[in-house]
Image (cartoon, rainbow, N blue to C red; front, side, top):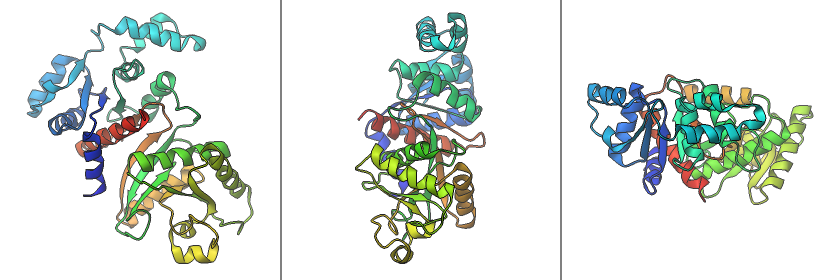
Length: 336
């Protein structure tokens, strides 16, 4: 069974309640129909019910009646959500009038449903920007305990089975924090290792903190940041198997590790790679994806207290379907 099928199978073991706030978008509604047909998750659609059913009929979808549909313009819980939102944002000066307007915004409404325990996760981005997806999540759901920065993890599946976990690597950050400081980089390491467990199913994440230096082979302030981040990550999670700073070849290739980092328990065996900055991570995975014919799944947003994930506006129905499964797995993990 390949990794995507494993993720789907894991999601089906405990159906989570996933909000799709862009329910009048064709790809989203089609993916919701497939998820409902397969028993992947309990789906909550936000949008005008008449529009949703008309689109479902147009597309020939047969399972949308299994979803819960919430109309943001006629929601009996609107005032309850508005009062809760105004209270959450009181220190930022939000008025009840502003809150009443925001809870009619599907992205804010979805996060309020999660905040009040009516759902377990949310996915948007087929129509919305990353900023629009993240803003309500950070304002309402906020970061997980001990985490102050959100990051983007990614599953990279290579045909080179000798690397990572049978060809699977989990990497971060590839999407959110452009120039993390040492503390943020440590958080990214811990969160990416958690993604490796909850999404990729790694029983034993082995994290390499990447740099252009291996164990002092070069001296520079950006190397110093990675060294400090490695120390801080150990303090955050003493049980985490992690080492740095390591060059990419030293992290993944046993023969190189023997030469460059012979005393490291991680070098040559890493299955989780943490990049020193977003620029390096984003460029690297896209090059590997194209030149190495690898499959990239994500980004998967990390560090939010309850899972809220972002899609590319060019996403496919399958992309949304698998992101429902991924979000469900994150939700299961968040409840532990």
